[in-house]
Amino acid sequence: MIFQKFATLFFITLFAISAACSEDGITPPPSPESPVNIVKSGNEEPVNPDLNGPSIYLMGKGMPALSSYEYFLSTLADSPVDVVVLAGSSASGSSATPECDLLMELDQVNSCATATVQSEEEANSAELVEIMDQSEAVYFAGGNQCVYVNWRDSNLHNAMNQLIERGGGIGGGSAGLAIQGDMIYDGCSGSVRSEEALSDPYHEYVSLSEGLFELPSLENTITDSHFSERDRLGRLISFMARISSEKDRDEYFGIGLDDNTSVVIDQ
Image (cartoon, rainbow, N blue to C red; front, side, top):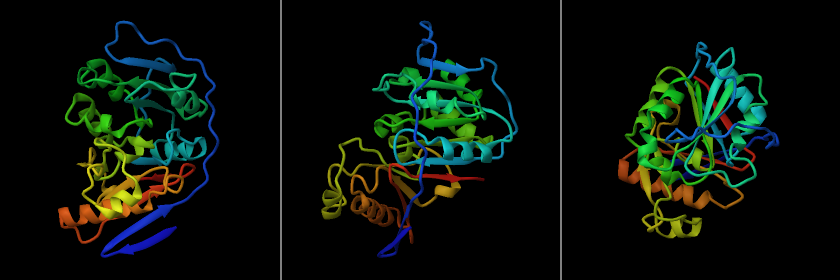
């Protein structure tokens, strides 16, 4: 753990070891009638387990880790759940549903649906809201967090918050991690490097947005991914300093996760 004082700011880096991931799996093609690209694996009939959350899953890289996600699901419910993976762009690998391919290896997953949402119309899709309402956990894939921020106030955004309110699970990796705090480095103007952010917290690439979710565990907290691998300590300190000053907060926290690091926060 790294704990560094910056004025009245505090910074936490958490390290853990994650399991390797697999991209094996076969999924059916999306329905041509659907306004959103939704591909579902597993059982067609959703389950309705009692929920113990909200629980939060934070991952440093884009793909979840089986070992920690299994633990995350154990904090969420005592029986299998339905998971939805939300992505702002199509997967770049050989599989269109790499996260679900991996998560379907877990006995706690009854089904896993991958929804690729690329427009305002899709973010307000009734079919997408129905999928969310039938799920107990949502995982935001890697990609571009600016796309996720643009879902604010959509029907999808409302469904996400309703999932949290009923004790569901939320989280993501890489870009999906970046949107979990009460403030978000949204990357909408470009990707900032540590030396740029430290020299100027108001650099054109330091674009910050209000958080999407009300998660008490991440109050006064911003998150960042690929932490050691991309030398992001400096920029996270800069984000924290700027937010603390602009929002007049006595203390502010940062969670920076390396690629093979995951954090689970239960109720």
